[in-house]
Length: 167
Image (tube, rainbow, N blue to C red; front, side, top):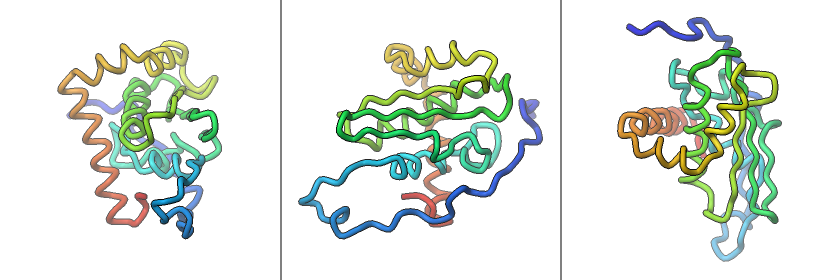
């Protein structure tokens, strides 16, 4: 069994146990609803950590306060916090977040994902990789890496459906 980078992570209670209740307008297919921070957070909160059977929310890697959405300008900004400053999984976590949003949000959105300032020893390198279209595309062409990303995302879907937390 491989050695874990962070063998004993701190587990946090979800910051919000409930999700927004859909309004009539949001359910109505004839009305275009605005995408907001809560909706984006709901998409990423249940992504599984690549190293532990826990969600990014449970590890406090993702937080609603670090998701910003400007629907009018088609821009999403997400900052995440690795569990430890030398986390070797930071790029993979960011890639999982990016893939979830690529698959879920309308194509009109520009998504910027970054490690929160001061939370990782290689934050500039990680941020550069996560926001470089060519590097992301090359990473997603790697069959093994794509399999790991899909596993993190599919486990999130299964866990969410079971616990009623996935939207």
